[in-house]
Length: 497
Image: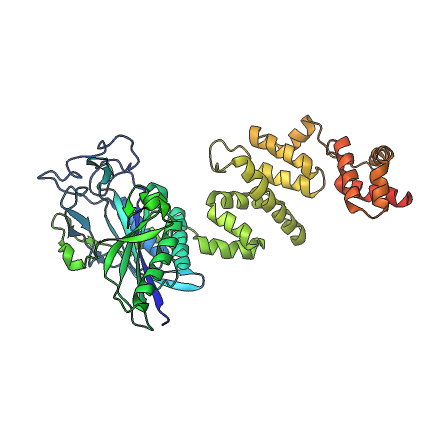
């Protein structure tokens, strides 16, 4: 039977705010010393009262607006009741039936994945399991945590991964979170069921998906596991399962085998809870929230150009290919630097020449400059090349004033010292040799000293021609104009045939 996967995602994101959600403790979950960013409020001491972090509210609403969500006029906080060692209150302040954002969508591979809700809650502490005990670090407890829930519109593990990757990119563009999965700033859980036609099957939740790879592999495994059960006439239990691989549980044992010997499996953790299990009720210590249209529009004005809009604009304005566009979209700062460089080109350039400049700038930014940066950022304080100087550098190459070999030397000097490319060329004597008589003389010397490659070229061996070009460029230290060298060398070799 042809079972159809229905996949929904629950994504938790730690917001980038100065302080925690309901107190003024610093929002620093990576603090190395445990239990220093705590106070009576986030530790839930008797008599303390929470105060809402307005910055966190604004960031969640901004996210909702970017995803096309509806922002209700009213919202509220609720208590989600459950007992766990990393939850000091014995309940979590969250949102149930009055979230900040309802609806919306994110288009992935031409399909709109609908969003159910985006709401705000507080994070829990962190458990550290030792050999004979468990320790609790409450630095993370109370950090603003945004939760986004999708409809079960996703039909493959690949599209689930693409959704999570695109959402991460949007969150970074919005500057609401770094959304780094390795640091736990973004955590993804997947709900998977196999159904026939429009009828959904039993839902299974997967946790411990701490990377995009784990998300994709975990869903792929669970689809196969459920399909095998159904084809054997067995029922799928509604439960929460954990993804286990070398990265998540290398020391645990499953079915008599060490997990680090297993490529990746899901294992049962507990029965899946329903909403009534948490006994939600309105948070009595926090007032209902009311948003005016003016407030919402002010937040909407802060939403920047988003990744998909940038992709479409870069293709239309700059005629870039998909690979180049994706580099500039994924690396937002590099994309902005690229546009600043383009703006420094002469405004009256003919269109054909302008696109030649743009293509050349793209190649040098993505290859040579990225190699020098070594994962650093063009927006960093140590980056010294101004857009104006980079534009001048591209112009010099495009107009044949420096060769590609000399260009590498010039770019290295610009990167190290922030100097003007023209000054570097003058100081180091790197001006390109364009005098044809001088080049002809040098080529004549190379031909006379390399009779065998000359003879090989006459026999039709084209690589011999490239060898001679290399010898000429070496003799001129890369200063000879490649175009002129190519032209004169062919002329002289033809005469000697």
